[in-house]
Length: 271
Picture 1 (cartoon, rainbow, N blue to C red):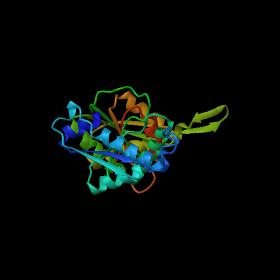
Picture 2: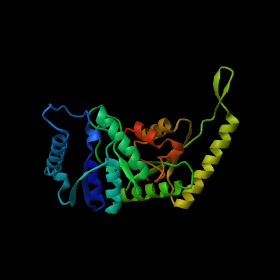
Picture 3: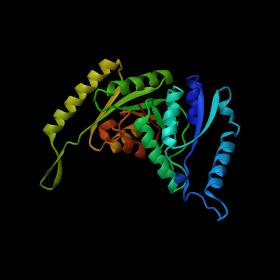
Picture 4: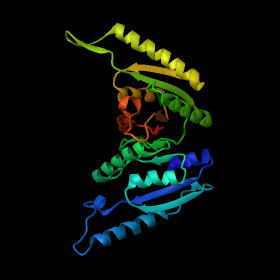
């Protein structure tokens, strides 16, 4: 909610505050109920409570922001994607964890589905259950590119966001591993590393020419989620921008898109 308010104020945007009450099959086992409470009673109670929560007064940080409250019933991920499409949303913002194991698993599933089905960018809050509270601001942006054709779109979006927020942009590319098995275990193949890194440097330079950026560049090799999040931490990034493939599974960044989100201590913007 704090992040949504910051975005809305910064970009003079309307907020659609959406809550979806899932089918009873989702709710089974989530609530304790006496024998006298039927399934219909339970669902009616959940809807009533959801509407009451949705109608709560907005905090002062929302003053002057247009907020439309929407309560729907159905599959959460499907309704989020459909609502975003029907209302021509520019951005979906959603959390990735909730209270309790059941809700956490449901939210993870919903997030993965939204990432795969949404045609607009998706902002996911820090996935870690105990991520440190952060001031809502964007001063440093880390953008992961895998040098596929979609990277032009990813880098362009990150550059536009950096310009709008007056933030510094760093492009990060993690290549495949350069280790080989040999006597005593894994060893770095120096010749192979030189080829991989040289190609990455040329690819990043060509990407920046196409996008029109002069951003700082970080190139590393190995585990994508781990090294990407380390790079973001190293530059004190406030948000991590990654690519994705709408209409398919979340394949951005060498197929490690959701792994990156799961391990990120900062919000991830998938475009």
